[in-house]
Image 1 (tube, rainbow, N blue to C red):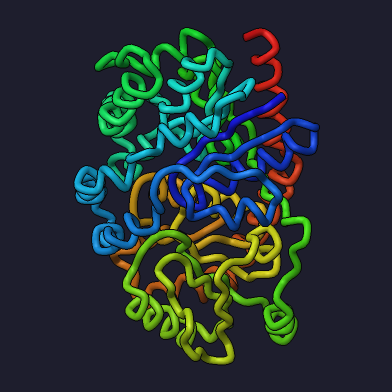
Image 2: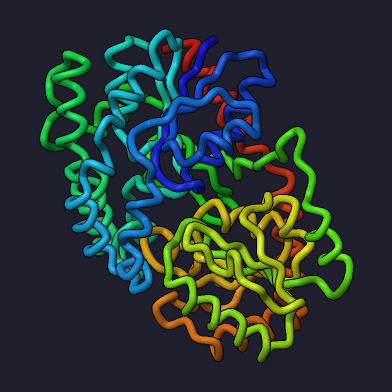
Length: 419
């Protein structure tokens, strides 16, 4: 079977789909991954055929640095409207070309162009997402409201706003342009586009653990919480020798990295180095898209990397400090070390609260409030808290037994067989 996998966004939106592609290839299927051009090298590392979609996403992220630092979702969204071409120009058209000849499609759940392309090609499809965007009364919205619980009615209202405004209305002009001009389909309705997938019982896969966030009782039966989609190491990957020596020549370090989240590199680096000095800890620092620490002479107690697989590095760390993106959050749990989360926007606040609720991390520190003093306090407390370390090990043991990719693939092929 030829399967097209279509996604958009940052590395966190891409890595799980690469892992899925690797698994499907191991079953003998032909797979093509369509994603932002930022990730052509990453796909090549894993031997996954790649189709670049639209423009680089890094420029949009970097242009929004101040808004991300402040966690200002509405200004981020406004910037998205101003840079609509970067967000959507040629994305759908490129994805359609990538999917031609496919027997089935799996797409990022929040990007409805994948459904339109499957409709045009007359092939079955399913969608996947790292964090929930299906409305429920049982927990707060993951995209609006910083994850604050507003009660069942308040939660339902925020989810409805998320579904209609953020998920659909924001991208509806681009999707309807794709449907009319490229696919020759009628425009999608103003409301209720997602209802079609629900009526068709199209599977939706959420690639996190129900142990971390249980499936709500008010979700329809086509929604599946599969378990974590674990990321394998690239076949020919080996750690940098200098990093291996650093890890071996001292106590387990703290990992500090904010991935694709932008920030003022100099300001953030100064804060981090001061926090490490106060807490007297070593660290592995991920430069990320902001370039924090990149090309700079650092203290001997800090090792800077452009990118290292979390599945290899995190089990070797005393704690992990990160922004709270879904992929990094699950990787932190699988690594068995406590997480210190500094959320900025969208789902990060919700994951930060779940980690604190699980007992595998301290109370979150919003990135806009981050200082050398509160970060050093969190690092010192987390790396010496035996109860938290024990809890992190217990959660890891539970999650290691999950095989979220296999669960999703089994459900997908069951659906395709009857679609």
